[in-house]
Length: 126
Image (cartoon, rainbow, N blue to C red; front, side, top):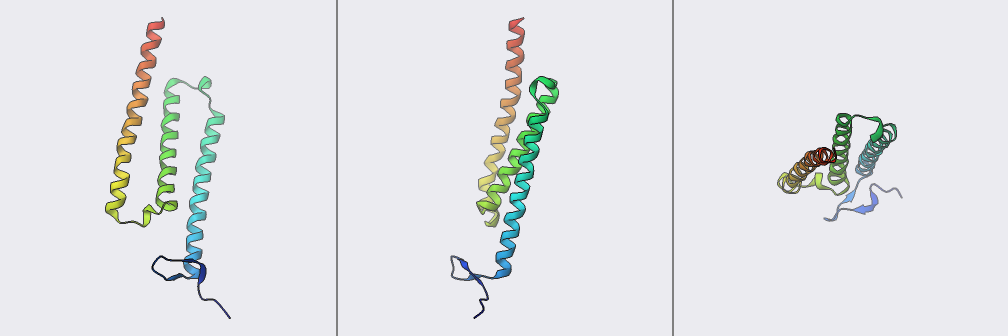
């Protein structure tokens, strides 16, 4: 007897997933996992190659922004694929993702205020 669908997963509305759908889901998960792994390896290589003692303050700021952008890309892929937000309606995605702009803004403020405080403390120490 030959099975025409993958019985390992049933949709909530009772329809079984076909083998083609199962392969597509596995390919999507494999792609996202590979992408997240590559981004993580790039982050690690940048961290190993550069250290704070070997770069100028301007370059260090670029490295920090590089890490922030890569981290947000990873977080976005995790939320959209593994947490299934990409399958939801556009209004729900917008409602959940729009506050992330405020988080990005807070990171921006923290980085620049931190630099200002460091410069102020260095001036006081002179």
